[in-house]
Length: 113
Length: 111
Image 1 (tube, each protein chain N blue to C red):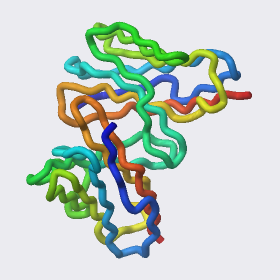
Image 2 (cartoon, helix red, strand yellow):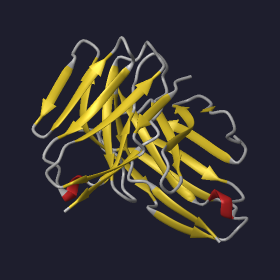
Image 3 (tube, one colour):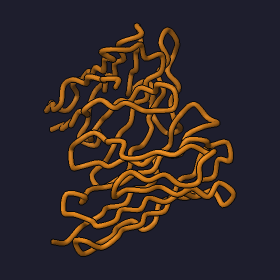
Image 4 (tube, rainbow over the protein chains, first blue to last red):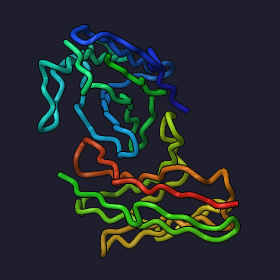
């Protein structure tokens, strides 16, 4: 099956710093990558859809200047949380769609102090 | 957009009993209906899926049934085991490019 590698798995940072999360498709080309955010005991909430070579499509209520998404190649999509604050602490997970199926990264637990 | 709801939100069963989780969706263009199992801090894992031209699919202790007319599909787990304890999500797909997950169901299997 398709493999999506996500790094880092866990990051702790100070308030005001920026954090970059990478997702790579290892054995296939991902033209579309979804970025989700998940709070404890909650569902996966779609933040944005990233398409290779074009601007990401953000969901309503998600600040595009706060959560920068770049999909510069068919195998790499990145999410940068800029000027992180404690309320940005969450589990972030990417997913690539291959046909009708979703293949997930392993997730990144972000803790902002 | 798609409205996807799951019921119940929590479910506790005795080991060996059956569990049923229902997913209701709004997008009539949905044509692929997967169920995912997510353990704490882990990525969701696809456990079973069904397409709109099929009404039921079974894989050992797990089954999925689809009622496309009523826009709902259900996950059935028989002979539950403690390792089935997790959060389960549905994610009906089709129509829109993006995939919306259901509200989630926390299943607890009591030994």
